[in-house]
Image 1: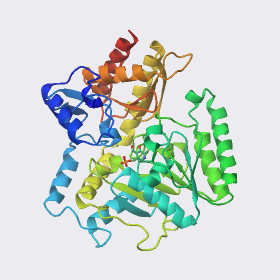
Image 2 (image 1 turned 180 degrees about the vertical axis):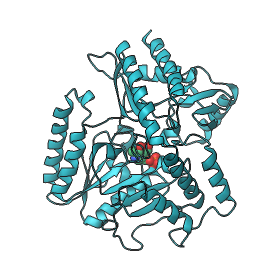
Image 3 (image 1 turned 30 degrees about the vertical axis):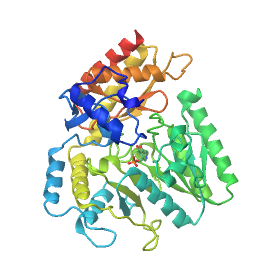
Length: 436
Ligand SMILES: Cc1ncc(COP(=O)(O)O)c(C=O)c1O
């Protein structure tokens, strides 16, 4: 039976039900939907389902809509460009708009980054980083972290390690070693002890590769793996070990980047400069856009070594320029910091009041809430998490899961404190009901 018409939550409205039925017949069975919300339209921090119900959005289209849904400035930029042309074939012909997008993006980044490769998604921005690292170093191996998510095409999937189902039956993979990431809450260790433990494992693996290591790929905060924030000492330690072993540090900012954590790049919170940065999701203001950025010293590959058809799509670039400028003009990083710390405080109180809320962690508006059977055992509570997600959606709040037992809170960065409170009230009600 099709999983999507089991209706784990209360049965949705008739229009939603009809679409879910059609989806079950025609759409690839590889999709996972946690509950039966059917998207119809959206504005700002709100989304509407096919039956006209309004929801507060704490998912932002999987951390994409940082500027808010149907942002008027971004919509205008897209509409203006749509009247001129959509596609130029940028890797075969010159065009100004992709150049302008690249120039704009570079102004958000540390000065060392002066070259950019454009693509259409997160996984492609990782593939480009992977190929560039191998090209530049002419070495074979890369190291990635347990619990990481870098995408689902074969290069990025060779690194992705957050859920077994993502890798099952897809081997053989490219040469990648996986080492532990300091998920100290789950590993039941103190942060610094865990950081050192993971750095030791990384160093040991680096030594085993006998100088044939091209790069270490890292999410500064693990996203799909459970919104896991590492200790500062860990991120700095990774940088130091990369320097000592001649490996490039590839920073996956696909989910954590674009001011979500307060700073443009999440890795800035740790005071670390990477060698290659991959961006996507929010940089396109809702349109598919990926960017891989490095210094010209590192981005030294020859013509023909990497390209694509749609990278630099004109409408995506117009939307991206407008979204980046909007984020800067409206100081969305500052809003992410202030509303984020307000939400962390309230979620901390919720954690203190409910046995099944085990941990609250995050930076800015990238917050993970770990649901457990009880605080002492910290056992994962997948069923309870699913119930909370369902109940919250029934009450008008969109949330997403991450990792085995985590709920992620990643609203548009334009969210106000009042809206944050509305969402957290719903979240607390859902937790209360599930706790019984
Ligand atoms: C950190 C990270 N890297 C890469 C990706 C892959 O992005 P996409 O789904 O656009 O291919 C994701 C997607 O969620 C992500 O969170």
